[in-house]
Amino acid sequence: MSAEAPLGALDGVRIIDLTQMLAGPFCTMLLADQGAEVVKVEPLDGDHTRIIGPYHADDKLKAFGGYFASVNRNKKSIAIDLKKPEGRDLVIRLCKDADAIVENSRAGVMERLGLSYETLRESNPRLVYATIRGFGDRRTGASPYADWPAYDVVSQAFGGVMAITGPDKHTPMKVGPGIGDLMPATMCAVGLVSAIFRAHKTGKGQFVDVGMVDAILSMCERIVHQHAYTGGVPVPEGNHHPLLCPFGMFPAKDGFITIAAHADAHWPILCRLIGRPELGTDPRLATVQDRRANQDEIIATVSAFTSQRTKQELLQHFGGQVPFSPVNDVRDVFADPHFAARDMVVRVPHPGLDIETAIAGVAIKMTETPGRVRHRAPLLGEHTDEYLGSIGCGAGDIARLRADKIVA
Image: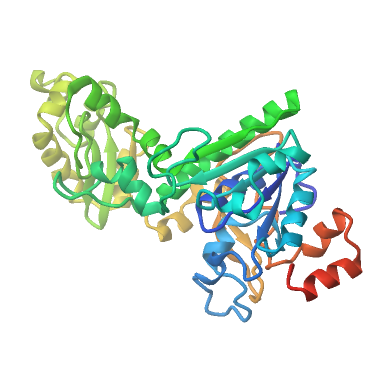
Protein backbone atom coordinates (compact mmCIF):
# COMPACT_ATOMS: atom_id res chain seq x y z
CA MET A 1 0.00 0.00 0.00
CA SER A 2 2.92 2.35 -0.64
CA ALA A 3 2.38 5.77 -2.17
CA GLU A 4 4.94 5.02 -4.90
CA ALA A 5 2.88 2.20 -6.41
CA PRO A 6 1.50 2.90 -9.91
CA LEU A 7 -2.02 4.21 -10.32
CA GLY A 8 -4.76 1.77 -11.27
CA ALA A 9 -6.25 1.41 -14.74
CA LEU A 10 -9.42 3.24 -13.63
CA ASP A 11 -7.59 6.21 -12.14
CA GLY A 12 -9.63 9.34 -12.90
CA VAL A 13 -12.98 7.50 -12.93
CA ARG A 14 -15.39 8.65 -10.22
CA ILE A 15 -18.20 6.38 -8.98
CA ILE A 16 -20.98 7.52 -6.65
CA ASP A 17 -21.86 4.43 -4.64
CA LEU A 18 -25.34 4.27 -3.09
CA THR A 19 -25.16 0.53 -2.43
CA GLN A 20 -25.37 -1.48 0.78
CA MET A 21 -24.94 -5.06 2.00
CA LEU A 22 -22.88 -7.28 -0.37
CA ALA A 23 -23.77 -7.24 -4.08
CA GLY A 24 -23.44 -3.50 -4.67
CA PRO A 25 -20.42 -2.92 -2.41
CA PHE A 26 -18.55 -5.87 -3.95
CA CYS A 27 -19.21 -4.42 -7.42
CA THR A 28 -17.84 -0.99 -6.52
CA MET A 29 -14.96 -2.57 -4.60
CA LEU A 30 -13.83 -4.28 -7.81
CA LEU A 31 -13.69 -0.86 -9.49
CA ALA A 32 -11.98 0.79 -6.51
CA ASP A 33 -9.34 -1.94 -6.50
CA GLN A 34 -8.46 -0.94 -10.06
CA GLY A 35 -8.07 2.72 -9.14
CA ALA A 36 -11.55 4.21 -9.48
CA GLU A 37 -12.48 6.90 -6.96
CA VAL A 38 -15.51 5.40 -5.21
CA VAL A 39 -17.54 7.75 -3.03
CA LYS A 40 -19.72 5.64 -0.77
CA VAL A 41 -22.86 7.57 0.19
CA GLU A 42 -24.23 6.06 3.40
CA PRO A 43 -27.30 6.83 5.49
CA LEU A 44 -26.61 8.63 8.73
CA ASP A 45 -26.57 5.35 10.64
CA GLY A 46 -24.28 3.77 8.06
CA ASP A 47 -24.34 0.77 5.76
CA HIS A 48 -26.06 -1.92 7.78
CA THR A 49 -23.12 -4.29 7.34
CA ARG A 50 -21.04 -2.05 9.61
CA ILE A 51 -22.69 -3.66 12.63
CA ILE A 52 -22.79 -7.25 11.40
CA GLY A 53 -19.21 -8.06 12.41
CA PRO A 54 -17.31 -10.21 13.01
CA TYR A 55 -15.32 -7.97 15.34
CA HIS A 56 -11.74 -8.65 16.35
CA ALA A 57 -11.51 -9.48 20.05
CA ASP A 58 -9.18 -6.49 20.64
CA ASP A 59 -11.23 -3.93 18.69
CA LYS A 60 -11.70 -0.96 21.04
CA LEU A 61 -13.84 1.09 18.63
CA LYS A 62 -16.13 -1.36 16.80
CA ALA A 63 -16.72 1.15 13.99
CA PHE A 64 -17.14 -1.79 11.62
CA GLY A 65 -16.36 -5.47 11.48
CA GLY A 66 -14.76 -7.84 9.03
CA TYR A 67 -17.73 -7.99 6.65
CA PHE A 68 -17.67 -4.25 5.99
CA ALA A 69 -13.86 -4.08 6.01
CA SER A 70 -13.58 -6.76 3.34
CA VAL A 71 -15.81 -5.28 0.62
CA ASN A 72 -15.46 -1.54 1.28
CA ARG A 73 -11.69 -1.09 1.15
CA ASN A 74 -10.34 1.61 -1.16
CA LYS A 75 -13.52 3.72 -0.79
CA LYS A 76 -14.36 7.13 0.66
CA SER A 77 -17.44 7.57 2.90
CA ILE A 78 -19.87 10.44 3.19
CA ALA A 79 -23.08 10.21 5.20
CA ILE A 80 -26.22 11.91 3.82
CA ASP A 81 -29.92 11.60 4.66
CA LEU A 82 -31.39 11.02 1.20
CA LYS A 83 -34.94 11.37 2.48
CA LYS A 84 -34.44 15.10 2.97
CA PRO A 85 -34.57 17.40 -0.07
CA GLU A 86 -31.21 19.00 0.73
CA GLY A 87 -29.64 15.57 0.98
CA ARG A 88 -31.07 14.61 -2.40
CA ASP A 89 -29.71 17.83 -3.90
CA LEU A 90 -26.23 17.08 -2.56
CA VAL A 91 -26.22 13.72 -4.37
CA ILE A 92 -27.38 15.36 -7.61
CA ARG A 93 -24.49 17.82 -7.32
CA LEU A 94 -22.04 14.98 -6.64
CA CYS A 95 -23.27 13.18 -9.75
CA LYS A 96 -22.71 16.17 -12.06
CA ASP A 97 -19.00 15.37 -12.38
CA ALA A 98 -19.20 11.61 -11.83
CA ASP A 99 -18.76 8.88 -14.40
CA ALA A 100 -21.27 6.53 -12.81
CA ILE A 101 -23.69 5.95 -9.98
CA VAL A 102 -24.48 2.50 -8.60
CA GLU A 103 -27.43 1.50 -6.41
CA ASN A 104 -29.05 -1.74 -5.32
CA SER A 105 -32.29 -0.55 -3.78
CA ARG A 106 -35.62 -2.18 -4.51
CA ALA A 107 -37.40 -1.01 -7.66
CA GLY A 108 -38.96 2.44 -7.26
CA VAL A 109 -36.95 3.60 -4.25
CA MET A 110 -34.67 5.96 -6.18
CA GLU A 111 -37.65 7.34 -8.10
CA ARG A 112 -39.42 8.17 -4.83
CA LEU A 113 -36.26 9.89 -3.58
CA GLY A 114 -36.00 11.96 -6.75
CA LEU A 115 -32.75 10.25 -7.78
CA SER A 116 -33.84 8.22 -10.80
CA TYR A 117 -31.70 7.69 -13.88
CA GLU A 118 -33.93 10.06 -15.82
CA THR A 119 -33.45 12.81 -13.23
CA LEU A 120 -29.69 12.46 -12.85
CA ARG A 121 -28.90 12.32 -16.55
CA GLU A 122 -30.54 15.73 -17.05
CA SER A 123 -27.55 17.40 -15.41
CA ASN A 124 -24.97 14.83 -16.60
CA PRO A 125 -25.82 13.21 -19.96
CA ARG A 126 -22.67 11.04 -19.87
CA LEU A 127 -23.58 9.51 -16.48
CA VAL A 128 -23.76 5.72 -16.36
CA TYR A 129 -26.45 4.57 -13.95
CA ALA A 130 -26.10 0.96 -12.75
CA THR A 131 -28.44 -1.16 -10.68
CA ILE A 132 -28.34 -4.62 -9.13
CA ARG A 133 -31.79 -5.91 -8.24
CA GLY A 134 -33.18 -9.35 -7.56
CA PHE A 135 -35.23 -9.59 -10.75
CA GLY A 136 -33.86 -6.71 -12.78
CA ASP A 137 -35.32 -3.34 -13.71
CA ARG A 138 -38.37 -2.67 -15.86
CA ARG A 139 -36.34 -0.44 -18.16
CA THR A 140 -34.55 -3.47 -19.62
CA GLY A 141 -37.25 -6.13 -19.27
CA ALA A 142 -40.33 -6.08 -17.05
CA SER A 143 -40.21 -9.21 -14.90
CA PRO A 144 -43.49 -10.12 -13.16
CA TYR A 145 -41.35 -10.27 -9.99
CA ALA A 146 -39.65 -6.90 -10.47
CA ASP A 147 -40.89 -5.55 -7.13
CA TRP A 148 -39.87 -8.59 -5.09
CA PRO A 149 -36.95 -8.28 -2.66
CA ALA A 150 -34.08 -10.73 -3.02
CA TYR A 151 -30.97 -11.85 -1.20
CA ASP A 152 -28.22 -14.31 -2.03
CA VAL A 153 -30.18 -17.42 -1.06
CA VAL A 154 -33.18 -16.26 -3.14
CA SER A 155 -31.15 -15.71 -6.29
CA GLN A 156 -29.25 -18.97 -5.82
CA ALA A 157 -32.56 -20.83 -5.64
CA PHE A 158 -34.35 -18.96 -8.43
CA GLY A 159 -31.42 -18.88 -10.86
CA GLY A 160 -30.88 -22.65 -10.79
CA VAL A 161 -27.58 -23.23 -9.00
CA MET A 162 -29.09 -24.83 -5.90
CA ALA A 163 -30.92 -27.41 -8.01
CA ILE A 164 -27.61 -28.78 -9.30
CA THR A 165 -25.68 -28.50 -6.02
CA GLY A 166 -25.90 -31.04 -3.21
CA PRO A 167 -24.73 -34.42 -1.95
CA ASP A 168 -27.24 -36.44 -4.00
CA LYS A 169 -29.94 -35.96 -6.62
CA HIS A 170 -32.65 -35.50 -4.00
CA THR A 171 -30.97 -32.79 -1.89
CA PRO A 172 -30.46 -29.31 -3.37
CA MET A 173 -28.01 -27.18 -1.40
CA LYS A 174 -26.93 -23.55 -1.06
CA VAL A 175 -23.43 -22.79 -2.33
CA GLY A 176 -21.14 -21.70 0.52
CA PRO A 177 -20.07 -18.17 -0.44
CA GLY A 178 -22.71 -15.60 -1.39
CA ILE A 179 -22.50 -16.18 -5.13
CA GLY A 180 -26.07 -14.94 -5.48
CA ASP A 181 -24.61 -11.52 -4.64
CA LEU A 182 -21.04 -11.87 -5.89
CA MET A 183 -21.81 -13.09 -9.41
CA PRO A 184 -24.24 -10.24 -10.24
CA ALA A 185 -21.77 -7.82 -8.61
CA THR A 186 -18.98 -9.00 -10.90
CA MET A 187 -21.19 -8.81 -13.98
CA CYS A 188 -22.31 -5.32 -13.02
CA ALA A 189 -18.68 -4.23 -12.72
CA VAL A 190 -18.07 -5.46 -16.29
CA GLY A 191 -21.18 -3.62 -17.44
CA LEU A 192 -20.09 -0.43 -15.72
CA VAL A 193 -16.61 -0.44 -17.23
CA SER A 194 -18.09 -1.16 -20.67
CA ALA A 195 -20.63 1.64 -20.41
CA ILE A 196 -18.09 4.13 -19.04
CA PHE A 197 -15.73 3.29 -21.91
CA ARG A 198 -18.58 3.95 -24.35
CA ALA A 199 -19.54 7.20 -22.61
CA HIS A 200 -15.97 8.47 -22.82
CA LYS A 201 -16.09 7.89 -26.59
CA THR A 202 -19.57 9.26 -27.27
CA GLY A 203 -20.41 11.57 -24.36
CA LYS A 204 -23.58 9.58 -23.77
CA GLY A 205 -24.28 7.53 -20.66
CA GLN A 206 -26.77 4.70 -20.29
CA PHE A 207 -28.65 2.52 -17.83
CA VAL A 208 -26.89 -0.71 -16.78
CA ASP A 209 -29.08 -3.36 -15.17
CA VAL A 210 -28.10 -6.72 -13.68
CA GLY A 211 -30.76 -9.00 -12.24
CA MET A 212 -29.35 -11.24 -9.52
CA VAL A 213 -31.30 -14.28 -10.71
CA ASP A 214 -30.24 -13.58 -14.31
CA ALA A 215 -26.58 -13.57 -13.30
CA ILE A 216 -26.96 -16.91 -11.54
CA LEU A 217 -28.66 -18.48 -14.57
CA SER A 218 -25.85 -17.12 -16.74
CA MET A 219 -23.35 -18.79 -14.42
CA CYS A 220 -25.36 -22.02 -14.70
CA GLU A 221 -25.22 -21.98 -18.52
CA ARG A 222 -24.66 -25.74 -18.58
CA ILE A 223 -28.18 -26.55 -17.38
CA VAL A 224 -29.68 -24.61 -20.31
CA HIS A 225 -27.86 -26.52 -23.02
CA GLN A 226 -28.28 -29.82 -21.20
CA HIS A 227 -32.04 -29.34 -21.16
CA ALA A 228 -32.26 -27.83 -24.65
CA TYR A 229 -30.11 -30.52 -26.29
CA THR A 230 -31.29 -33.60 -24.38
CA GLY A 231 -34.56 -32.72 -22.70
CA GLY A 232 -33.04 -33.75 -19.39
CA VAL A 233 -33.36 -31.97 -16.06
CA PRO A 234 -29.94 -31.75 -14.35
CA VAL A 235 -29.88 -32.67 -10.66
CA PRO A 236 -27.24 -32.43 -7.92
CA GLU A 237 -24.29 -34.68 -8.69
CA GLY A 238 -22.62 -34.60 -5.31
CA ASN A 239 -18.90 -33.97 -5.67
CA HIS A 240 -18.51 -35.39 -9.15
CA HIS A 241 -19.35 -34.22 -12.68
CA PRO A 242 -22.41 -35.22 -14.72
CA LEU A 243 -20.41 -35.54 -17.97
CA LEU A 244 -16.77 -36.16 -17.00
CA CYS A 245 -14.86 -38.75 -14.97
CA PRO A 246 -12.66 -38.75 -12.97
CA PHE A 247 -13.58 -35.17 -12.16
CA GLY A 248 -14.40 -34.43 -8.55
CA MET A 249 -13.59 -34.89 -4.90
CA PHE A 250 -11.88 -37.90 -3.34
CA PRO A 251 -11.09 -38.82 0.28
CA ALA A 252 -7.66 -38.33 1.82
CA LYS A 253 -6.40 -39.61 5.16
CA ASP A 254 -6.86 -36.16 6.72
CA GLY A 255 -9.55 -34.57 4.57
CA PHE A 256 -10.33 -34.42 0.87
CA ILE A 257 -8.65 -33.67 -2.45
CA THR A 258 -9.88 -33.02 -5.98
CA ILE A 259 -8.71 -34.57 -9.25
CA ALA A 260 -9.75 -33.68 -12.81
CA ALA A 261 -8.06 -36.34 -14.97
CA HIS A 262 -10.93 -37.01 -17.37
CA ALA A 263 -9.02 -35.97 -20.49
CA ASP A 264 -7.28 -38.54 -22.69
CA ALA A 265 -3.93 -36.88 -21.94
CA HIS A 266 -4.31 -37.14 -18.16
CA TRP A 267 -6.18 -40.42 -17.70
CA PRO A 268 -3.22 -42.78 -18.34
CA ILE A 269 -0.95 -40.63 -16.16
CA LEU A 270 -3.41 -40.89 -13.28
CA CYS A 271 -3.65 -44.65 -13.75
CA ARG A 272 0.15 -44.93 -13.49
CA LEU A 273 0.26 -42.69 -10.41
CA ILE A 274 -2.29 -44.81 -8.53
CA GLY A 275 -0.47 -48.01 -9.44
CA ARG A 276 -3.05 -49.21 -11.95
CA PRO A 277 -1.38 -48.57 -15.35
CA GLU A 278 -3.47 -51.28 -17.04
CA LEU A 279 -6.59 -49.14 -16.66
CA GLY A 280 -5.01 -46.53 -18.92
CA THR A 281 -5.20 -48.93 -21.86
CA ASP A 282 -8.40 -50.75 -20.89
CA PRO A 283 -10.74 -50.60 -23.94
CA ARG A 284 -13.72 -50.30 -21.60
CA LEU A 285 -12.34 -46.93 -20.44
CA ALA A 286 -10.90 -45.64 -23.71
CA THR A 287 -12.98 -42.48 -24.20
CA VAL A 288 -14.40 -39.69 -22.06
CA GLN A 289 -17.86 -41.19 -22.57
CA ASP A 290 -16.62 -44.68 -21.60
CA ARG A 291 -15.09 -43.39 -18.41
CA ARG A 292 -18.27 -41.53 -17.49
CA ALA A 293 -20.28 -44.74 -18.09
CA ASN A 294 -18.00 -46.57 -15.65
CA GLN A 295 -17.86 -43.77 -13.11
CA ASP A 296 -18.60 -45.87 -10.01
CA GLU A 297 -15.70 -48.23 -10.69
CA ILE A 298 -13.25 -45.39 -11.38
CA ILE A 299 -14.26 -43.37 -8.31
CA ALA A 300 -13.87 -46.42 -6.08
CA THR A 301 -10.44 -47.24 -7.55
CA VAL A 302 -9.07 -43.72 -7.19
CA SER A 303 -10.56 -43.38 -3.70
CA ALA A 304 -8.88 -46.59 -2.55
CA PHE A 305 -5.52 -45.01 -3.37
CA THR A 306 -6.15 -41.47 -2.07
CA SER A 307 -7.78 -42.49 1.21
CA GLN A 308 -4.55 -44.09 2.41
CA ARG A 309 -2.51 -40.88 2.12
CA THR A 310 -2.59 -37.35 3.57
CA LYS A 311 -3.40 -34.25 1.56
CA GLN A 312 0.24 -33.16 1.59
CA GLU A 313 1.44 -36.59 0.50
CA LEU A 314 -1.05 -36.54 -2.36
CA LEU A 315 -0.01 -32.99 -3.31
CA GLN A 316 3.58 -34.15 -3.63
CA HIS A 317 2.51 -37.24 -5.55
CA PHE A 318 -0.03 -35.76 -8.00
CA GLY A 319 0.86 -32.07 -8.10
CA GLY A 320 1.90 -30.82 -11.53
CA GLN A 321 1.22 -34.15 -13.24
CA VAL A 322 -2.57 -34.22 -13.30
CA PRO A 323 -5.01 -31.43 -12.40
CA PHE A 324 -5.13 -31.71 -8.61
CA SER A 325 -5.82 -29.77 -5.44
CA PRO A 326 -6.21 -30.46 -1.77
CA VAL A 327 -9.52 -29.16 -0.40
CA ASN A 328 -8.15 -26.18 1.51
CA ASP A 329 -9.70 -24.62 4.55
CA VAL A 330 -8.81 -21.02 5.40
CA ARG A 331 -5.86 -22.12 7.57
CA ASP A 332 -4.41 -23.87 4.52
CA VAL A 333 -4.99 -20.72 2.45
CA PHE A 334 -3.13 -18.53 4.97
CA ALA A 335 -0.21 -20.98 5.02
CA ASP A 336 0.10 -21.76 1.32
CA PRO A 337 2.99 -20.06 -0.56
CA HIS A 338 0.81 -19.55 -3.66
CA PHE A 339 -1.46 -17.02 -1.93
CA ALA A 340 1.53 -15.24 -0.41
CA ALA A 341 3.25 -14.97 -3.80
CA ARG A 342 0.05 -13.68 -5.39
CA ASP A 343 -0.64 -11.15 -2.60
CA MET A 344 -4.07 -12.67 -1.99
CA VAL A 345 -4.11 -12.26 1.80
CA VAL A 346 -3.53 -8.57 2.47
CA ARG A 347 -2.76 -6.95 5.81
CA VAL A 348 -4.61 -3.70 6.52
CA PRO A 349 -4.92 -1.35 9.51
CA HIS A 350 -8.26 -1.33 11.31
CA PRO A 351 -9.64 1.55 13.42
CA GLY A 352 -9.66 0.52 17.06
CA LEU A 353 -6.94 -2.09 16.65
CA ASP A 354 -3.25 -1.71 17.45
CA ILE A 355 -2.39 -4.44 14.95
CA GLU A 356 -3.17 -5.01 11.30
CA THR A 357 -5.73 -7.56 10.25
CA ALA A 358 -6.26 -9.45 6.98
CA ILE A 359 -8.68 -9.29 4.07
CA ALA A 360 -8.75 -11.05 0.71
CA GLY A 361 -6.55 -9.51 -1.98
CA VAL A 362 -7.17 -8.43 -5.56
CA ALA A 363 -7.55 -11.31 -8.00
CA ILE A 364 -7.33 -9.23 -11.20
CA LYS A 365 -3.62 -8.77 -11.88
CA MET A 366 -2.18 -6.25 -14.35
CA THR A 367 1.43 -5.53 -15.24
CA GLU A 368 1.33 -1.78 -15.95
CA THR A 369 -1.56 -0.64 -13.74
CA PRO A 370 -1.90 -3.25 -11.01
CA GLY A 371 -4.98 -3.22 -8.84
CA ARG A 372 -4.26 -3.26 -5.14
CA VAL A 373 -5.63 -2.58 -1.68
CA ARG A 374 -4.65 1.06 -1.26
CA HIS A 375 -6.36 1.84 2.05
CA ARG A 376 -8.68 0.38 4.63
CA ALA A 377 -12.46 0.69 4.61
CA PRO A 378 -13.60 4.16 5.71
CA LEU A 379 -15.17 5.28 8.95
CA LEU A 380 -18.74 6.48 8.57
CA GLY A 381 -18.68 9.99 7.10
CA GLU A 382 -14.89 10.10 7.19
CA HIS A 383 -14.78 12.09 3.94
CA THR A 384 -18.02 14.10 4.18
CA ASP A 385 -16.29 17.46 4.56
CA GLU A 386 -13.88 16.70 1.70
CA TYR A 387 -16.58 15.92 -0.84
CA LEU A 388 -19.07 18.56 0.22
CA GLY A 389 -16.24 21.05 -0.07
CA SER A 390 -15.57 19.80 -3.60
CA ILE A 391 -19.11 20.75 -4.68
CA GLY A 392 -18.89 24.24 -3.20
CA CYS A 393 -20.10 23.84 0.38
CA GLY A 394 -18.23 26.06 2.81
CA ALA A 395 -17.41 25.23 6.41
CA GLY A 396 -20.50 27.09 7.60
CA ASP A 397 -22.73 25.24 5.15
CA ILE A 398 -21.36 21.90 6.28
CA ALA A 399 -21.81 22.79 9.95
CA ARG A 400 -25.46 23.72 9.31
CA LEU A 401 -26.11 20.54 7.31
CA ARG A 402 -24.62 18.52 10.15
CA ALA A 403 -26.65 20.38 12.79
CA ASP A 404 -29.83 19.76 10.77
CA LYS A 405 -28.95 16.05 10.56
CA ILE A 406 -28.76 16.09 6.79
CA VAL A 407 -25.14 14.91 6.77
CA ALA A 408 -22.81 13.27 9.24
